[in-house]
Image 1 (cartoon, one colour):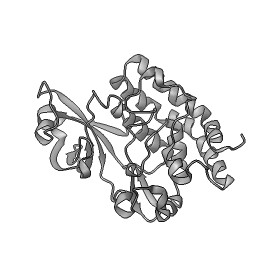
Image 2 (cartoon, helix red, strand yellow):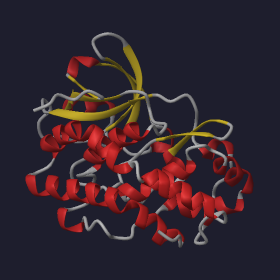
Image 3 (spheres, helix red, strand yellow):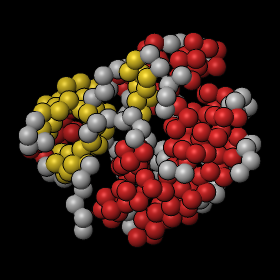
Length: 275
């Protein structure tokens, strides 16, 4: 089996220091220092309980590799770090494991210099904040991200799943709800299914972009999906084989491949363009 190249698997000795819990008590997430055998990295570490987030880890891996292949802005490095259950329980009292010696995978991405848009803008009702809409609309990757979410069926690109790194600049985080949801099952993954595109709704509500050139730009970018998929397919399959059964692997592979093929028509259908 081809070894991973872009996501590094690390053993328990690589986890060095717990720093702090995530702000606002977001899930079972925290900041930490890990070491990849060469240098320390400040990371955002996420643990996904199997009972409530059974597909979150595979979704994060899948979207990270495909975003990287498309040249979208994401964390520069990602790791899966195996940590003893007992240690995780010691830093998060909400967790309970029957065997303290079990090794639990943490999804770790390098810290991104920036902050949630919620820090900069009042986003209780995002459509009542034209300053934010104007800022994100000028982000050079905004249309590409709408396409990316359409392709992978990401149903939850809320404003908390972006990091604002500067004026008109954002980085993508949190992809546990691609393929419809973090609890997807093989028989849900119908490639032609219409799935909420939350970023498109934030930008344009139900109207779609006013400028037909933007739709054409999205359709052009959507043609990159298959090339990106092929570029990282070997590494995707490596992780899928570790995390999915054969039926799930086949269903996810088919979903992503088919949606890559039909992505231009999905964009056209959603925004009323002509193929």
